[in-house]
Length: 151
Image (tube, rainbow, N blue to C red; front, side, top):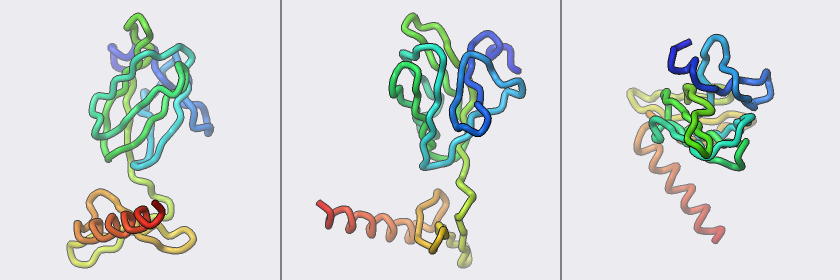
């Protein structure tokens, strides 16, 4: 464990629940994982007043209530999360890793053009970083048409 993390409280994974607790840091120092374009609930024991994300382009964290944080994966990569109490004291300092969802995702290559499909139970277009710009643009335009019809 890095020395600067040892001094601060940190978030650790609760087995299988998808929730996190403070103040102890996981012994292996493993980052908190979240899928890109997905959200996760993080529970902490102390009251959070401020959350700081090292690179907000990778992940976003909002305070739902003082002991519940919502972590959203925005793009692939790693960043850090720092949580402070009202007095500015650190409650948590840990790594966040945003990864691609693997289950049910099929990637199709046509030459260098890549497209992604979610195939559970039937295949439908999804937008993933790195997909062909023409494919992604068509998927976004289709989504906008559907949204405008519903308004």
